[in-house]
Length: 226
Image 1 (tube, helix red, strand yellow):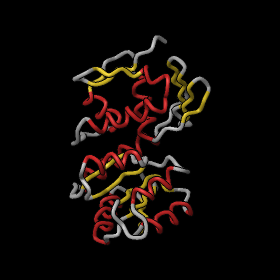
Image 2: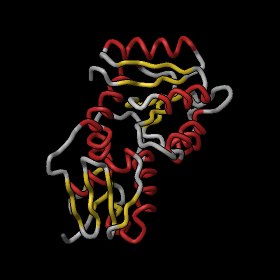
Image 3: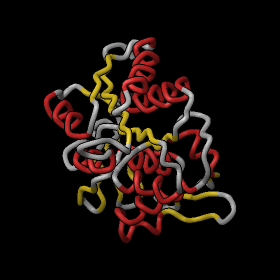
Image 4: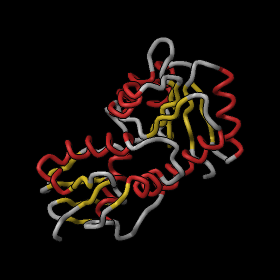
């Protein structure tokens, strides 16, 4: 992971130092911001930022608004790091376009493992990275999704979820399998993370949302004839 750059945004100096120290040990380059406005200023000046770790409650501009602003222009992975732990807050984070939502207090080692997992999957490339299922076409290298030749904008996690479904079409997948493969680590959460992303993915696929079948009590199946 050498030379990959992570932007850490938190108004608490001690929290930024804790996260920075663990990331630096894994050879990441770390840039810090103390509030939302500073974070956006840095992000739009530095085109080499690979991932953003973003606190929610900050002065000048909160993390949700920062996330929304970044999402208007970039698909860079965003991890929300916050003390707000209610289901509504977590869903708000995903609705804003966050890829991960980690509650404080947290294990720095787990945080770094999640950063590793996201950036490892982002960095993967495939010379023949085209997937097709029904009227859906995915270019894994360029991160482009087309439905009936219409380009569809997906977040990083929505894209990864669709790819996993298409690579395992017509196979029943449990929520545990989806978490382990799409999130790529032992996830200490619950099924609403998957269900939220599936709901958003279905909405963006519109008519083709019917490809994603719910298997009650288990998970999902991406069902398509070709």
